[in-house]
Image 1: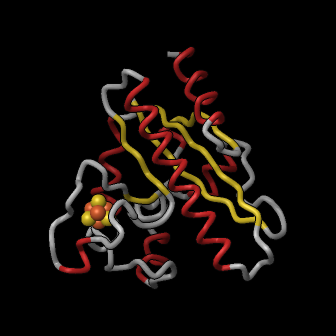
Image 2 (image 1 turned 45 degrees about the vertical axis):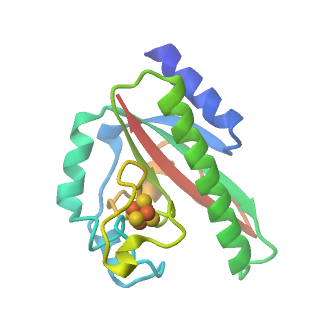
Length: 183
Ligand code: SF4
């Protein structure tokens, strides 16, 4: 397993992440208050996506899924902005991060012999151009649907700190973090 995890970090770095590391699931802190940020619609996706609150379920129920895993791959991408109000640059950074996230997920599914993988991205599920939640239809691709670290109540700031990874990477940058549990 030691070689596998070291290869996994190398593979994640080779796919254009800025930082990648292995985290122990036991060290992940959950904070129910983070759900309040979702409820305040701070990212604009509340009640608009199957993988966001309230549809994704309660933090308590979601936490249950973590209990069967011991380790996860955590990675961060960092993107340059024109200035601190460059919303377009932030969106482009998020799209690029999600592209990298999907590549890493595919790499883990195809190149490693894990029994189970549980992925968490940054922000709402964007697998479909428009989530079918918005038209009152079931999720079309439940195998591809991914919820976010935030929606699951994961304290990302505490987690990256625990790993020695900076949460912010300096003036005029935006950083995104994802986590993929495996066993
Ligand atoms: S896979 Fe499509 S329908 Fe399902 S949650 Fe993601 S965006 Fe919505």
